[in-house]
Amino acid sequence: MTNDITIIGGGLAGLAIALLLTEQGHRVQVLEARDRVGGRIRSAFDATGDGYLGDLGPTWVWPTYQPVVKHWVDKLSLQTFDQYTQGYSVFDEGPGREPETCFLPDQDGSMRFVGGPQALIDALLGRLPRGTVQIGCKVHTVSIENSGVKVHTNDDKAPTISSRKVIVALPPRIAAHTIKWPEDFSAGLKQTLERMPTWMAPHAKVLAVYDKPFWREKGLSGRIASRSGPLVETHDNSGANGMPAAIFGFVGWPHTVRKQRAGILSQDVLEQLKRCFGSEVTPTAIHIEDWATDPLVTTPSDLSGPVSHPEVGPAILRQPHCSGRLWFAGSETAAQSPGLIEGALVAAQQTALTIGPAASPSG
Image 1 (spheres, helix red, strand yellow):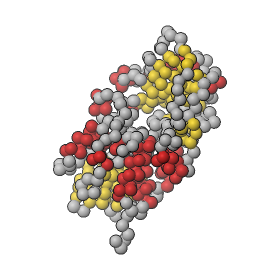
Image 2 (cartoon, helix red, strand yellow):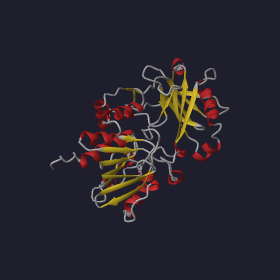
Image 3 (cartoon, helix red, strand yellow):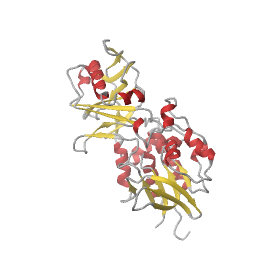
Image 4 (spheres, one colour):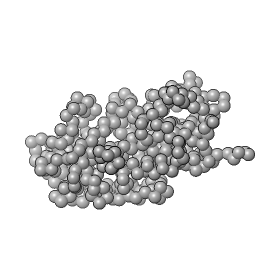
């Protein structure tokens, strides 16, 4: 059976679009290259694989200022809580220098999901019909046919999938870099896709897990601001009631330095955490996610260009192509908050709204 719509990419945007289109009566299939869904939303889990520990991808939302996020929080019955910011922050000038405590301004309105953004992914997945999402299915070619679109994959069981429409819910640069498009594919569109930087691509994130949030007992917020690194910025990433206890941070060292020190980066992080929070407590685990090494997130262009948040891209990114048979709807295509959680949801809503409900059998 031909799908109404095939969605390439099982990250937040892809799953949200799938749910909206399913609710509108479309037959939808989601193809995800990874062995998991979520894309850049990635969580660390305990040894059982079930206990959520913290975030290795995006963390915050601002429902007070992001009505689209607020809508989805309500739609999916999710719970949020305020980011913990109470107490002093630590200003770190590096080894050999005594860290100083100071107050840093809060990120007004920043909130987190109970269970992390993983709860958002799980809620979306739980509402989709069984079999909607196929993991481990990498798309390598998209061809436009008179009757629709064909998607060619690395899956021996389903090497070619036919659909009436295809939605590419990948970062635009990844779509341009990893998928072969028809020879008559608009050169201007492909260049636009290639110019859009992927948020988080050059970055690395660290999660340090503890038995308890001991820094709170010391009157500290969990925040570090550092000139030397490796962590240039950290925050409390503990659960709503303080457990599980964790600190997350962003590695400020360039990807070339991270690559050179890959085998000892966790030790570099540990030394900094002990310097800033005290040497008497050691993390039970340190998780590192270097997004610069993920070929489904990062291209060479992301590592050679300036590190900056993507700006709102041209309208061509949000328009249908190939006579309405091809759409792009990754978070970076959004007309609002591109690259962020809100951007993914905005892109999903706009795409689903424009496509509209499925035609009735008689019509």
